[in-house]
Image 1 (cartoon, rainbow, N blue to C red):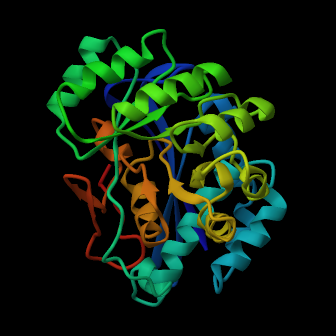
Image 2: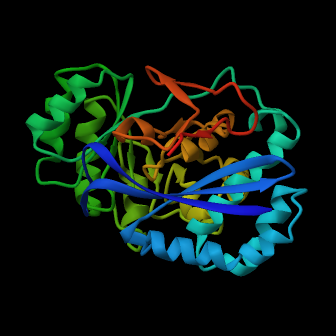
Length: 338
């Protein structure tokens, strides 16, 4: 297979702020694998919290290029396993290659990826749209300028309850809140009672991942379901979420791609955990791949292309929360001309 890398730095429509940082652009890296006249696309994201930079991602992927040159793709699961030996220290890089491998594999069969898995897309969940932390006035403005059936509201301020109370005045849409580890256990429990009365659906990662006792307390006493994010990064984390969370949010970039995500979904269902996939602000390349997992999911947060002012590709589109697949085979993503 031939490897090509495309680095991007895309501006957000609005500065994107969560409890621990704010940014105005999103650096991304798109991977293209070509074989037998066909190609597959994958994507990964720069993320300072996980110490991932575009130079680090590029360097680690380029180090496996000699292996790729000699590789003939047959089974994506085996492809992931073979690359994992060399990239187990960098799941972000492995994700991009795995995603491209699945895209190429489906194209070889001239099928959409969900068709390869034999999935029924008739009951797919709708995606939420994220409102990042800002002044209450600005958060209200963002909500009003983008009418949507489901919102994820980023919290982690001294005005968290006031934010939801203010936003609720302008819409009856579903709210989900994400505190990104910013709360304490007693605060999370108390907030859950107020938020439940404001028709919030669930709370994502209210406490730091290392606060296991606090998380267990919140799980027991919360008035709302609790979904793991930073507490569920890798496959082995899923089992640890039983008895601590009601569901998990799988990020393909963090876990190493589609292949481990499929295993995480299967394990979560065995444990009766709700399953969600989330966004790392990927463009349409990565988001188009996530779309094919929808039949497996209870919730999805795949609004990256909606938050970005520019894009890398054409592919999946949205109709007021509903996810529309592209016409082509594979994930459906096609790079825009640069």
